[in-house]
Amino acid sequence: MLFKADGTVIVEAVGYNGDGCEAATEPYEKGLGHVKERTYKKEYLGKNTRNQAMIKNK
Image (tube, rainbow, N blue to C red; front, side, top):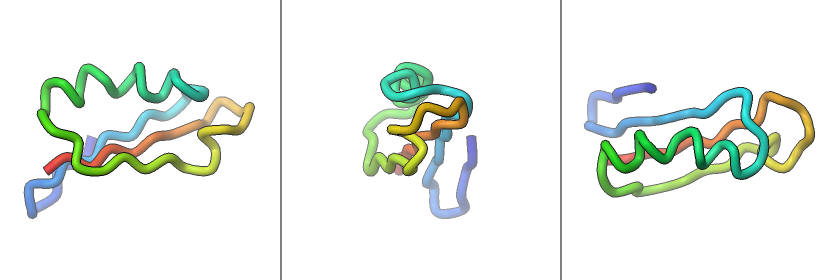
């Protein structure tokens, strides 16, 4: 989890495939509040084990 000076929090799931990324970050999203932006990396749809989703929450 990355906390930026402007108040943005970035949560990144590493080692999950597909919907597993969202499942892994969901508790953080609920705890932090409104998700301002969700960005999926190209690996999200891949079959390797380094799929990631980045959530920016401000």
